Length: 353
Image 1: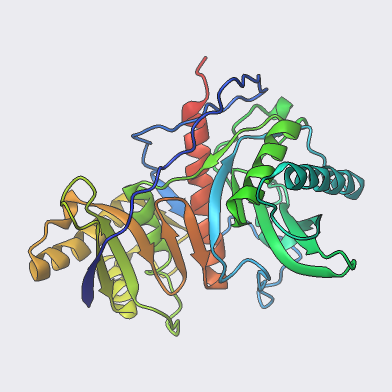
Image 2 (image 1 turned 90 degrees about the vertical axis):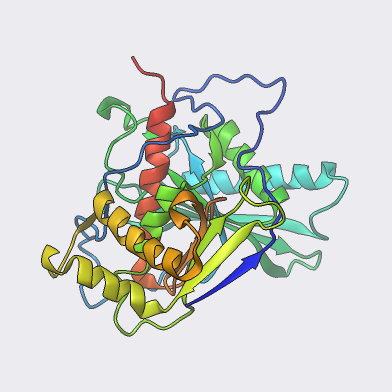
């Protein structure tokens, strides 16, 4: 186990509302966030029902998703979004026009050529029949010679088994709900994509920041249930010292990979060989034992501090809404956790009748 201290600049958690803009949305999601979001009672570890087309010995490889840094955004339900190929072709042309317009009006051009977008459904991320298939958006840079160059932006719109529907059943035919959008690309292109979605599908987007409790869940989900032969970097628990200690911004605590798995097994060996979900009380007890150990070794009361990042051989996640998934085994649990968190935030912000 090792620790180190680093200085990191502060970052604004949420983007500000645009001035002079007032739009009515069918399912309006106000900008901003609940400073004290409710803590979920549990999180699923396995899909409740896998797709029939995926055999038990044929696990997906999640091409294009793994080992890439993603910025996590929330999306309110998309109004009048259609799930057929002819509609996706229209989406491609419309987004191309938006990117071209942004290119022509920008004082700092994004590239030297035109950009071509593509929309497709990503079946590997459909874990439950009731969820819409994940949508993959790619933007390539096309040079003047017509040759397709590198991929400059990619996004996944995903819905992974949210426990509570955000709208009534009779509205389902009018709305498509993707609680989470993962984006990889520079800020300018990401902004064009987000504004295009908001303008065409009457939705709202925001960065999904994660609370201390959210990060504790992710720590357990991506460490305690790792396969025995998993190899990779040590488990990282980064604590924020913002407003606590001047001159020092974070404390990084690193643990051996097998320690978390062994600790979980010692604490909950009687809970059954195969678990389908993890409870908040179990997460709190697990993390409390780790923090007791850290306090004994370092004389720092970690229970009074908040986590800002966690990392395991399976996944890395930041409270600022960034994630990188390394292992196919962690895809479901990580994305389900993000979708449940985003869905809870959306439900909290909806007006109550």
